[in-house]
Amino acid sequence: MSDAWVRKVLASLDENSAAYKAVDAARESGTLIKGVIGIDRNTGALSMVRLASSF
Image (cartoon, rainbow, N blue to C red; front, side):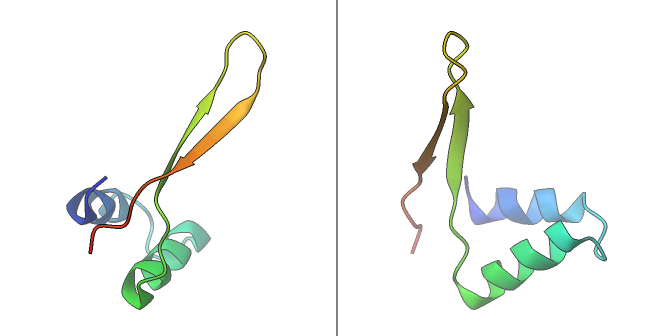
């Protein structure tokens, strides 16, 4: 999940949306945390894995 990917996704959002503003502010301040979320189809359990920062 590169910074370029994040910028591409932001470009597809409405700049006035709460999601855009929150992600853009976190990206600009260096506090954006990237992760991947999945759901176990058998149990319905939700799992999130935090991705390493790309400094």
